[in-house]
Amino acid sequence: MKRIYTIEDACIGCHLCEVGCITEHSLSKDPVKAFLHEPERPISRCTVEELHGGIVSLSTTCRHCDEPDCLRACISGAIQKNAEGIVRIDTEQCVGCWSCVMACPYGAIQRNLKKKKANKCDLCPDRQSPACVDACPNRALVYREGSQK
Amino acid sequence: MNYVIVGNSVAAVGAVRAIRERDQEGNITVISRERHNVYGRPLISYLLGGLINEKRMAYLPNDFYAENRINLLLESEVVAVDTKAKKVKLAGGDVIPYDKLLLATGGDPFVPPIEGMSDKDRIFTFTTWEDAAKLKGIAPDINRAVVIGGGLIGLKAAEGLNLLDKSVTVVELADRVLSSAFDRPAGKIVARKMKANGIDVITEDTVVRIEGDGAEISGVTLKSGDFIPCDTVVVAIGVRPAATFLKGSNIEVNRGIVVDATMQTSNNDVYAAGDVTEAADFFSGQKNPMPIWPDAYIQGDIAGAAMAGEKKEYVGGLAMNSIEFFKVSTISMGVTNPKDPADYEIHTFQDIQNYQYRKVVLQNNRLVGAVLVGNVDRAGIFSGLIREKVDMTPFRESLLTPDFGFINLSKEIRNRLFAPQGKVTNK
Image (tube, rainbow over all chains, first blue to last red; front, side, top):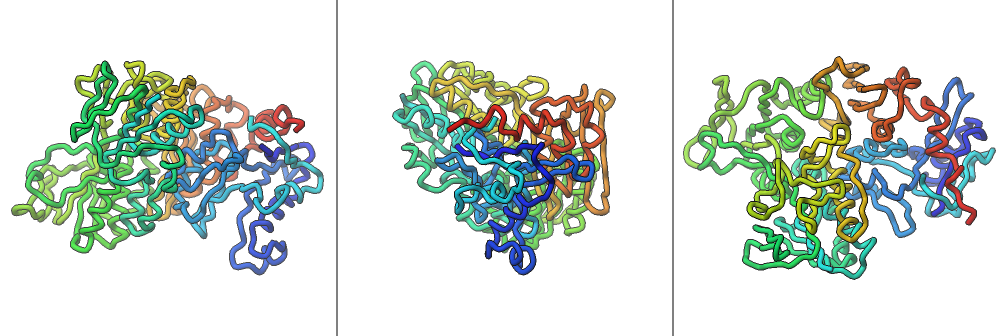
């Protein structure tokens, strides 16, 4: 399956992957509206980590594991893997117990505390290529066929 | 091939999926004592407290059984296993033959004999949907409840009753609540939050007598002599592997069903998974019953694969729990409260006032345990570091920082996890 990979040396720490992700998962799909005007701004599914004021940075996101620890830890069955291998959360079914947060070794599941729902990369079902990858100005994120490990 | 699975919770689901990945043809029969399709067992406290409705109890869509061509026998109890004839016997007398058998019956609540309990109506346990439904059914008539046991199950039952505006007292024999999953400061934070929400927590004491006339409960008397008035008692002392039906079956049962790394029992065609087993511990390799939801799934997956002919190996159970008490998130994993602290390196951060606590436990420079209260974001990074036995020598200083992440580790580790090298194909 196609996965998102990170080329750390190409990351400039601009956080545009997070902006792209938030925009894509907003109601309007418009960055200004999503950030300023929508009642609930989505939480980014990718996480940019930085050290030494941004000299070292990289964007981390879900690996869509072959044997997902999040799915195995989920107590409500909200996390399932579809036929294409994509691991998604049914937010209706999620009870916000954070078992997936406890289990994911990639730190790729976020807590939406306002909604009390877990939040994770869905590989952008409405797009050809994920919004974070398209938003990256230096091609530090690549979307290619490949393995998890 | 006839696959028979006794039990219908998460270990059974892991096994069914693993079998069907490898064998589309074989017959699968799932036998359950309960009357429901697979449900999120830990959700029973959410159901009791009114946080979710019955529809959301379903762990999987109902078509799971049809899609996987499962012959599902609900409200059927297996009372005996005949390993020579390769048959299981049901309570009604029916006999079901198997080629490969999985025992995934889970745990039974442990209820010690307490004076005065035999003729009382309102004494409950709290491990099944049915238990929660019964409690919820009589909820309008409950005024005061006593929960015996301050472990995870007891506290979740207490929280559920509290959400229904019942007055609740938890009685715990140890000197603090959650003594098995948490260390002292974390248990203290939870106890503080419970008290702030009106739940009484009594420690270092236990119920010695249930008082009342006839079937009605008027209260409980504690070992200390104190009397607590109540009309309902929930016994939540612990669970035991549900393996009594194996008496005389030649399947080795110690505290739980003894299994090897492929989840095979002492009998070649019989496997076991989940809370009923006694599988190896991740650190020591010692066999212990470990009732942990994710491990039950993993064991079911390994057992299912083996039953369908593929050997996978269980790397050992890592205890972990993520539980919220009155909106305070808590996650604990691995060794959280070592008996011999001198053999470990322990770092902590605490801000009890704001319900924040963080603790990491290292041994020989490897992370072996963590406790997080309050901010539990990205706790799974710790579980990954524990499982991978990463040498933390260069990174230990950063472990307690609130935004700890992969950036605090080496570039080599980050590349191994996230970089395309060696992973992308040309397709």
